[in-house]
Length: 287
Length: 232
Image 1: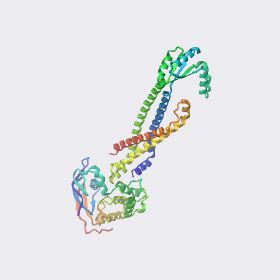
Image 2: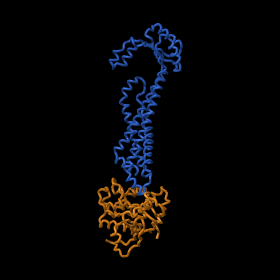
Image 3: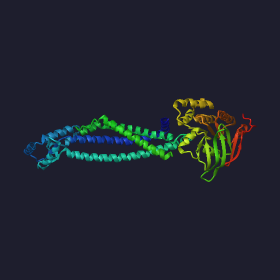
């Protein structure tokens, strides 16, 4: 009976039902996108954290003999597993390979402006800091990049992303609750006469309230599933571009278990959100 | 005789200061048929609203089928209302539901098992003679048929008491008689009936107890008259 009345209420005001679902959809679309982004960031951070590698870029004036001496010194330290020298020409080759589809970028760059470099793998990830600190002291070294820096930068960005996400989602959730309260309130007002009749023939308060609460929960569930589906569609659409952009960083494919975990959590949240909104409305409008 | 309804020194004063009822005393026994008569605004509907606890009296006490209306906890009001069949003056049928659904609603509210609902609704519609209209919407029915639908809803839970507020109010004389005869046949099976009306023709022609109200005061309480013809 509750479900029948709920379905009846929805059919009687489809535009209000659509608005309610749409507002929930927006919220959960944003929640899904941020969940995927935070997952991606975590994967990128993991990738860099697992790389026991230091990249050393030499100054233009560095001579090959000085570079060789530095290589020898590093090998003797016993902390390095391998050292690969990348000359300016090789760097250009790599650059060309990476940007083969963009002739404009290829035209602008020559071997002169690309630095030669060392790609050093350490025996242990714990040695990266000391290797990097030693290299920074060398006069022929322009810049040292090692995962710790990348990782700390990424963690910083992920933190910003998380904070922006939480703020935006909080804003949208409050927005969704308020709009849902208004929509359910309007529906209650429209059914005022019917509610009065039901009361006069013996309906309890909860008999009248439950269909509205279930209605809110249903809007929540449908909105969450659609929002998640839309975000999944956007992710699918952007996957080729993102895969190229992230190159060898193994973010894709995102495992289905994670995607369904997000869906499950979102549906639970939606049930709470829809339930709370409609509960607030029935308490407010059905005294 | 078992007393079904008892009003003891009942007064109802509205917020505006107007007395809708003043010091009303009467009781109705089980199985009685009572006409509640009086001009518009005399307090007939107020009495009905008090009996289903839609209103509380300002003073006095009311007992309906062992329920003390004044002391009745809010949560027990639905239980009381399920024991009283009410035929509203404005019918109060849900316009977007079929006649069948309107009547089934009372049973659904009373948590009657789904399997029994169809049978009981059809029995009630059969009793009031509109079984052929069960799938129609209220807008598709005539005034008399709507009144019968409202009576069917009031009867479907087999209540001990039926309150009918001006059930013949907007009907022609012939249809009015059909409705009254229907209520009389229900009364013959033991249901207590109070029918509010200002149709003097019907009251005069039926040998029933008459309680008269005027400006919120009880002005007459006459036992069934032997002179009444009973059938029109």
